[in-house]
Structure formats: structure tokens, C-alpha cells
Image (tube, rainbow, N blue to C red; front, side):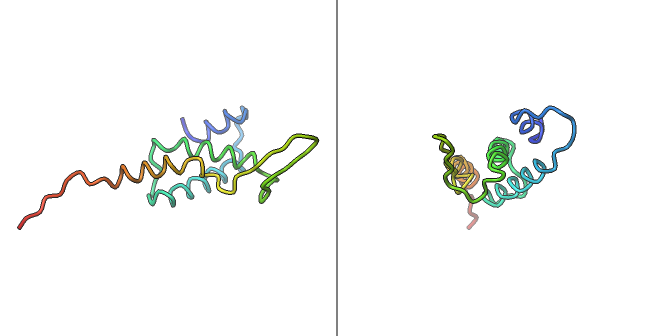
Length: 107
């Protein structure tokens, strides 16, 4: 299943029309994750990060730059780094990728 399908299902969008806003959010989130990973393509095992961060970013539309919001006793706090909760997973993937399996030297 494509990331866009996962995001639209989790947000409860079931019409067949393409959502340009979601397309942009997914593209930007994917590009940011590729930069964090230093790769050309997001590995399949980390695509869930794109899905989950895209949903967070979609839900923040209209609240960009806000760190706290209170209305009639309801308070919401926003992280300034949407990838913060995934940094351990990103580091683990990078460490796994950079493991040296063995070196052969010819003398």
C-alpha cells in the first residue's frame, strides 16, 4: 500500500480525489527524512515514519509555529521537531547501515 493510501485512510479521507495538500506534505516529509538518513530513497522499513509525520504535519495546518494552544480548558502542545519521536529509529537504521561486516586487506 502506498504512503498516500495509508495517510488518507488514517485521516478518514475516503474519496478518490487526490489531496494536493497531502501530496505536498508527504513529498516534503519524504525529502526531509531522506536528508536525515543521507539516502536517495526512504528504505521500506522506515516508510512508517513518513506516514506518521505526514499525519502530524497535516493536523498542524493552521497552527504552524505554535508551541502551545489553550481553548476552554483544552491544551495542546506541539513539538518543534516532528521527527523527534523517531530519532532513535533513524539512528539505529544509520548505525545498522554503517556496520562494518569485515575488511579484507591485501598486503
